[in-house]
Image (cartoon, rainbow over all chains, first blue to last red; front, side):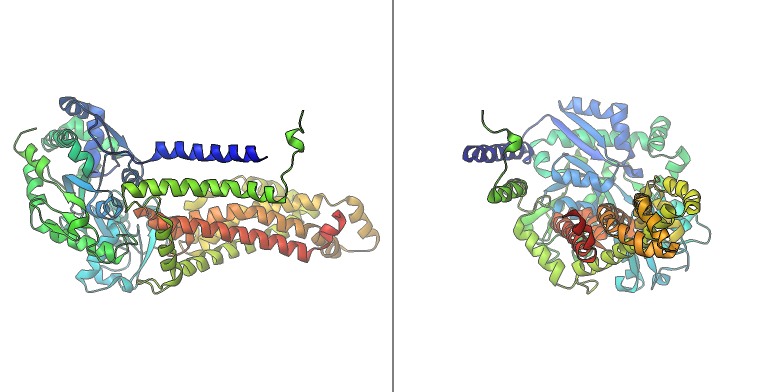
Length: 356
Length: 273
């Protein structure tokens, strides 16, 4: 009896040790193989094209590395996977970069400022024609997402508070059917392509959209800072392939646009309509100007204030300064000793100067 | 040759030890991984330390939320239990009435039995979008999902239990002059009531599943709502205690039903012993 107990205990501990050894977070160091995650969104479709067209391989080969581009069906899940360490990089918005990986202690660098939402996120009402009509309404949205941020910004413009409305957390997959068919749902905040569908509902009015707060909802390619520091080749390959694709896209490459339209589940016209409300930075120089502008720290200050007020910076955060954010040129906001989100312009600059 | 393993039994202390072992193993695994990940990154959210979880639980269970002014854990628990309770109550009534009807009365059986059999095979999650459209986004559709999820099972189970009542008993009741209503109240109900309680216990798992799914899709409060909300920013310090709490609630409900059954229907065990 005694010995069998000991054996079982020993076995348990042994298994625990083995599992622990295989599951412990990977230590960063120079490496050759990288994995980057993306999910479907108008401004991110080029990543899928990079993988399918072989352009990614071309650029990875140029720097002697391999980069696997993985499409994840669920946006939040892809960020969570990145935060947990399963990917070296992932596409996400500026707000999610702050509240998920950075607030989770994963030092992350925004390598590419790809685009900002210029009408891709909006508020649609069945009853009412202006933002002020939101007062007292029940609003369906994905809580704590950029939709929620957009709502807060919209309410600010008419001096309303979040207390003046009630928000109903609604999955983005169901938001269209809810708004189109349920009389209970009179107001929604959502993003494209859902936004286009809810705006088309008879009698519905789009009272606010992200073009009224340009440059505040930014779509980024975010990579692990330590990985990037040890492997600048990853940064060069990703930025290199991105601006080759941007040049093709700007020139209106039919094959590429059609492939991206198909991959996003729409046709060429539908995809082009989504691009109208997405302000793409086709030229690396424009992205550098945007990333180094004095406006970006102001935007991030608003984003972190919203995030802190909604508890998104985590249990340990006592002020909005808990997570530090660094900008090109050495400017930081928040705790300079705990910088976890860094906006980088160096790699995009290399692309702008034609040095990749 | 020693005793065969099938004949070797743990003593009282042994049983306790073997029962506790899997729990301890999970605990040890968690603490090991958590310590490993936290050593690498002190802000890691995936496997928070027990001290972080304790702080979060304190905030959730005792400190009013700054935005809504409610104490979140209790507000969530109250709304979830209300939905669950209503769903279970309605399902039980449907199960009892239709179950006894289809089990005892041949015309009702002929009319309803095939329909209920088909109904019980519809995966409730598949009709969720339809429920939201028909019953709206509020409490009603969440309760209806629970009812659709478990009532057909209860009806079919009840019908089978009624049919399993020995026909001698039914004939005897009739020769003693009982009318149909008396047979229902004096013979059928006492025989199937305890069985209904048992079926309800088995339905608790699916009922929670449907409740949490409904809350994940559209809600303003509730235990499932909170989990799916904070999942957005990987707040495992909220999710883990909520999962433990839901498990505890489910366990208590199961235990309470079993206890009530023993107390309310003592004839069940008298026959067995």
